[in-house]
Length: 348
Image (cartoon, rainbow, N blue to C red; front, side):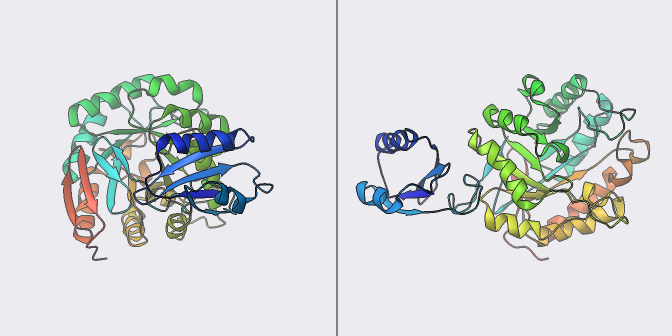
């Protein structure tokens, strides 16, 4: 249930109304947009007489029941698109950002070379795995704390904000200087971790699970927002189907559906979706055409010798060529802290 307030309601009245609602055993979530302020009630609201609440509080414009199980991420609660500022790179409707870098941080020379190159090509953020969830316990699982240190050194060298994956909530103290915390596909329903990053108040990139529905993805985002963190980016990275020609199947329909259901930005990871280097560029173009707010692309200075996911990584030249192609399709405008591709003026 939501209550849309009339314009210019004093903050003390809003807070008093929230306390009144919460005294009945409900949790409230305040959404402040450019045109409306909305108080969202979280809990079993079946017993609440919505009309009576509206009539008894003259500062309420109207009430509405939200039937979907996700409330805080729901577009009906927050009609305006959420815009997230990450070190000067803004992601959300109207702004298109590229996140690029290797699957794993392998050495100082590697990550700094990649960071300098992807920035020169126009990427706005640097990705790189320090902690790697791997199917086999014998595979390379990252450099851990040393990997984080090298990512931050690459950030200092280039100015690029850093995106990297967390494995569990005990690692949060290590992520104080990281710009965006990635919750990977295997952790999408790690609810303790979701609550923890929700309390951490740092942008979160939430990947869709390998076999999860869109509603389950939105419910996972709800965990983060309900804990107090509204800076969530949803990532479609392909789902597991019966098809074996590709690593996963990229669900392009997820992009417009998520943007219809939620106010959160939606990006696409074509690298993990395909698992094949030659498919990354066409899937990236398709994601742009479907309305994505950004892309996350695995890029390596020597994919043939990569310790993780080399087969799906673009080399630096290939990434540069893809960026040139994307810039031809989207009007380009430079922004502080990274490049920003404007959606307006697409020629796809």
